[in-house]
Length: 229
Image (tube, rainbow, N blue to C red; front, side, top):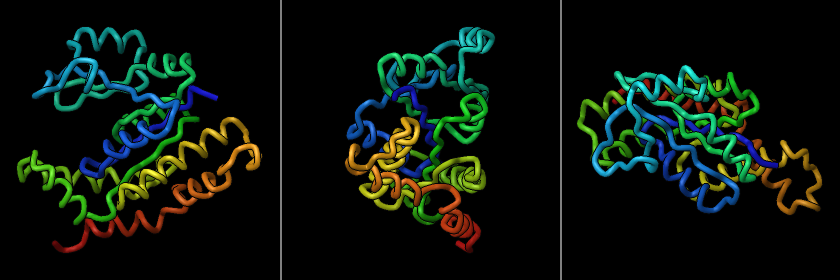
């Protein structure tokens, strides 16, 4: 079974990139989709590595040709995920990971309702603020804006299939791996744990991350954003 689509979103500073990189390193048959953008490269960013950098006219031609699974205009620049990445991954017998924001995830879910969506969250506001400061790449006003945006993003958690709280890297990586394994088993309609060693454990681990089973934890995280600081 190939051609599965995994949507992964997270507030900035939640550790999403580190988790995705670990997942790609240890799980075979996964590809990562690189977004298109009309903004200029920053620092050491390279074309076809961090983004596909195109001009506005080219991006709008792609919109007109229905080439995107999702796209948005943010602060005057377009960002989007080309649909051909999913077709290319399927042809190679692989599944595809999309690293996109809440708005983009909602668009993809409308087009691809069978996609598995995963929302990665920090354990609380204090931890998120610490991680943002440790990156030492944002000014104070940017950090405060990201913290304010994070609460709004987290409030959209009900639009996701799975919720993963990134507290410890090793445990979070295993949880993400379990979700991928369980979704692959489900789509392949594999139920025989004897024929698939570890299947029951993967499914049980993934079940604990289902949105309905994480509701209380998410409410606790949201409450931490309202606590006096």
